[in-house]
Amino acid sequence: MSLDRLFPTNRLTGISSYASISCLIACSSVFGQSALTSSSNAAPPITGEQRLEWVTLSTVGPASLAGGVISAGFGTWINSPREYGTHWEGFGDRYGIRLTGIATSNVMEAGLGALWGEDPRYERAIRAGFGGRVGHVLKMAFLARNRNGRLEPAYARFIANSGSNYLSNTWRADSEATWSKGTLRIGLGFAGRIAGNAFSEFWPDVSNALFHRGNRSDPARSSGRP
Image (cartoon, helix red, strand yellow):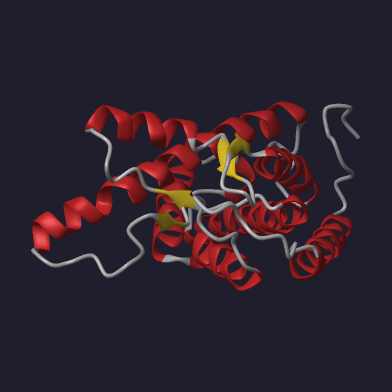
């Protein structure tokens, strides 16, 4: 076994690890929510139901599923990882692997964040100028609001992005299950978060301009996940 691998290659071990950690974090999400109230000038803390909604939308929402098609399609085109090949079955394998990684990261982020009140949702900067909104898109990939409405480093996101990408080495193809590829995926995860934030920030404006209709969704909060 290569020393570059973080975890054993046994796929059954990977599936078992994934299931165990998912259950643990899900329980934390349910029972870890604090009853503390927010300050008078802050939005109410995110509820357990809203966390579940965020996990669902960020994992299997339209933007996430479309992103999976693009990612799997590109991977199939360049045949990466090479073990999957350039056929429809390989496309399906790539799509499924991405989806399990996204699901693991989202469940971990929502569950861990519940322990200290971190809100994973993206908040639009609708009153700022264009430059300010772009800056907001970038910084909110690394920051999140706590239960008191203050911005702080998104600790749960850092842990979830890193942990899920290294954990996924247990069920990825051999050429992808390495320290270096896991580290690369962490960077791509934050790049994806920035892209998701940009979509959440600007798409409602583009949609309203194109279709001349009001935005019925929450103008400030969004999943922020492509």
